[in-house]
Image (tube, rainbow, N blue to C red; front, side, top):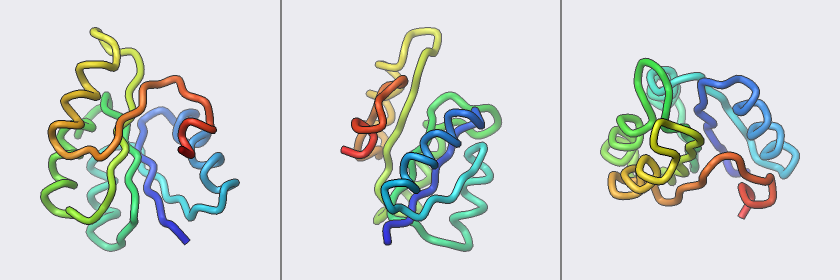
Amino acid sequence: MIRVLCVDDDPLVRGAISACLRHSGYVVHEASDGRKALTFLSHRSVELVICDILMPDLDGIELVMRLADRHPDTKILAISGEGQFGPGPFLTMAGHLGAHRTLAKPFEPARLLQ
């Protein structure tokens, strides 16, 4: 089974993504910010990290950079919604820094599963 870590500070978004993935057969773990994600990953491994970009404490851009450096075999899907400039610049930056794919919020479950 594919193990996924879903990192988002919004519990409703994190829960919806996790439920969608679990319903599709993935093993899903959750973290509410980048620091908690790194702590989790220091003890366990996953095949995919889905991380929001705009989060307090340790944001998604920093998390993407650290994951790309420390866990190069882990795939990264960066997600972002409405920031001051919209999701575009943040997702582009995440892609340049190590995210394998990006996805703008809001998105349909079918798009996530693609």
